[in-house]
Image 1 (spheres, rainbow, N blue to C red):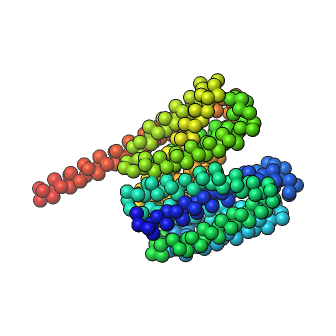
Image 2 (image 1 turned 180 degrees about the horizontal axis):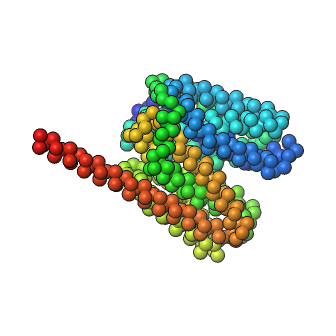
Image 3 (image 1 turned 60 degrees about the vertical axis):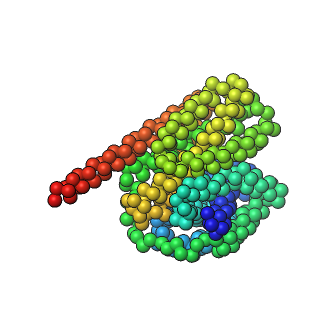
Length: 406
């Protein structure tokens, strides 16, 4: 890669780190926000739900609407709105204003993620797209490992308002870096929203979205309840819980980076095996939970496989759009992050149902079943691809024979 491409990769990594920190920071500050505004914890928790819901619904729509604009000015405008949104959050004295600021921030966060992926896929050499996209995804993981704990510490020390002044400062830094590194020549594609949304009518796109969603749901059905599982099943002392979460985050960084290597070549051919491995690992927790060491090993492997497919799926969505609906390229770039957010919501809901009606450890085999379902869909998707390739070859052969007879 050139020096400019390396600086661009670093900036896009920093961008996703900042976006991830701003998104997930509220989770660490719920108690402080609830106490300051004199509201119940579940009411404060709705701020997180509203962000995820807005992200999932708004990202594909607004990404499609904004795709007609050149990427350099669009990214700068959206980053400016992101900064303003965090300023409003930091200044919020009422729950209503705070909710509105989080909704606005959610919309621009989703579109910025899609644009970051789209820029990387357009600018980087073909053989570097997978590794670079994995580095960009790693920004979110590093945000959960470093950004959120740091922001939470600032919020607990100086008040939650100060924590969002911290994310505002980070946003300004990213804005300045983007001015220096985002290429000027990346033009938009003029197309109607209806034409772009045609991408979502392709069965293989729907299948790929479902595969990504179910894979994340499988892990997050367990991860959402990891703290009580560690305490009540593995009997980990409470003082070590945060350390285990930190180690989980560190391991998941390697998951994202290895996923970049997996994406090189025909990554979709390998995904079904990754999902089967994920299923085995999740179910293994049921059998290793009788031992602290064994349980922690299963959880470590759970972290290692959670993001292995991100880069592969990201490139799949973009390449499929390039082939069938080129004007929906930016929309395609948003689908991985949207599927992740929907998967997190479904996984946490499933985990809630399981823990309410069964034992905590039953999360392991229920998550494994979801991963198996994702593997089945991955196999179906791959067979559809093989069928398409075979049909294309047959048509080409017939065409060549026809031309030869003439």
